[in-house]
Length: 264
Image 1 (cartoon, rainbow, N blue to C red):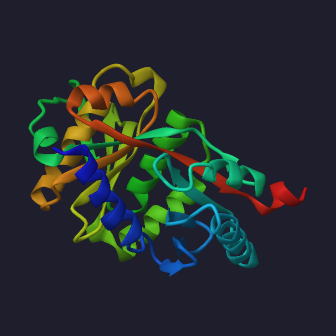
Image 2 (tube, rainbow, N blue to C red):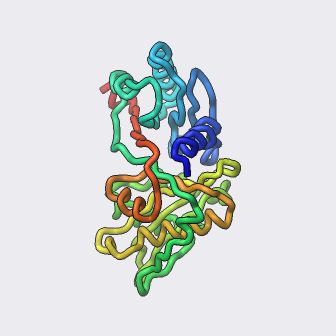
């Protein structure tokens, strides 16, 4: 694949032409940015920006004003190829806190779907279709990442209730206990399927579960006609994904704005 062409396609279809990714969410194109605004449990933030050195600070101020007027924390999802080159510095100066930088990795779906990736003996994959399944997934998420999955639970329940055709979630179960989980989100017409939340509890790591869940979701994406897979990869998952055939196209860093943190 031509990396530059695929990155341009990703920027246009996934970011500039973004669709709402949850119930009650709306996409707005204002002031040189594309943003999503939704309920508190949804992802709120800036997906894309086309800014210059002369327009960036005003756009940042406008987004802060918009989201804080609604009482929302929000994220500015910054990619390393976004302009202007000092946008990250400008966001920090405006009170945003940068999170962990991740690699934007993309692969051809058919290639990953063909990867042999058997589950360990005694492990079954259970599709998440209801509240019981969501609870299993969130349990894995909390144990794997050490975070509170309350907002994830609310968001996923809403997606399954109102947008079931665009979200896939699965839990790997061993001896009746959830040990790994993952999600995939798709937007018709983009060509990209986003892989999210692949996590395994500590005692089950190193047994091929992450690889198996990537291949499982790739097969579903292939069946649904999505030619590309996209992952925001941590330093831990990046080597595994590279061995599977994913390519780094850019990096992305979440810049979070929390009104209480900036006002004291």
